[in-house]
Amino acid sequence: MKKRIITENYTPALRDMEVGEVLTFPVKAYNSIKGTIIPRLRLEFCVEDADWKVGEVDKRKGIFDVERVA
Image (tube, rainbow, N blue to C red; front, side):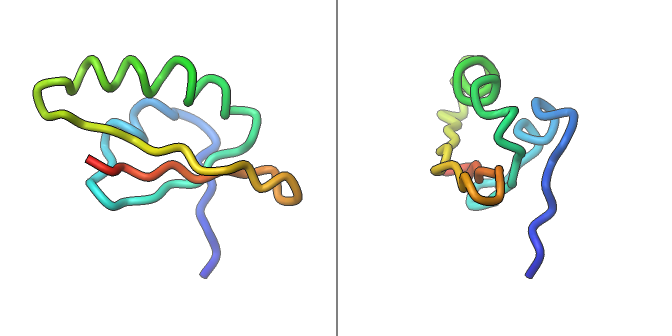
């Protein structure tokens, strides 16, 4: 199955994820997503105890996955 890579609007894509869902992003978004967007969303959704897990970067393909874990 071919993965759909999210190339824009990272925050809405992460915000709208369901628990267990996995999205794929380009490596250029790694620092923004891991260092800024996910911490902000954790605070925004703190009552729900929401959390996301950032996977390893596939250096050959230039992508990484993010999973909504809670």
